[in-house]
Image (cartoon, rainbow, N blue to C red; front, top):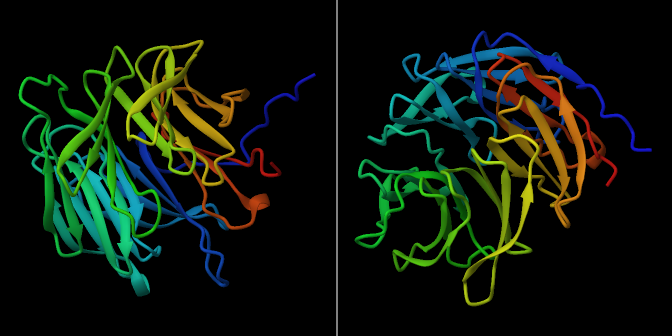
Length: 328
């Protein structure tokens, strides 16, 4: 008999708005307190203390426009956030500060989350959907210098970029970008050449979210359909469909592979979180707690496997925190 799915370990309430973005920062240096950042529809970023399970700070930098991406840049004091005000903000949170250091005006009206990749100490690449319909712009941070603009070929009807993932085979190798588009395609881009290496039709509908395992060169994407698409990248840098996994209910807002590459989580429009084994896509658990669409799922970066957490943010204003498959 399979074990019944667990209840959340705890629930964070108090955003008073739908939760669209989550990011853990659980540095294991004492006396560091594990932190969860959440971005909400009200435009606030809440900094949750996971020991007290309360909000330490609420950051207001997006003029009350929905925040749909939060990431840290090397430490929990350096935060990046992206909102529907078409701005990406870089925050300095050291010594209790709550100030926006700098910002990038994207001029993009969509809700495609930007993607970050660390290139060197204090140097990052950031990919973001740009003003022109199908284009992706790549900048270096913190300098904000343009690295390249990725434009589909004339006649390629990809539509808007919906989700982005910067990655590299190994530290020091050239960065690549995976982008999911409105027409259901996933495209692999070479940044130094500024051109598409491979394109794969993964979905009939817009790609809502994707994640990629650079060790296995295998990725996964979800859309508004009842299908998760699993695809791989061969040595010639060609994308190929590896398999598809049919879902009971349609609609995936977010998909994320745990950093140890053992399991993955999906955020469902059916109010449920689904957990799969990443190697064979074996369904492991359905976590049923929320009462509305789940917008985002995120795994914690604890170095101790037993302390690992999963967070889910929902339209129901709540963030559920789960301790699941920590022994695998």
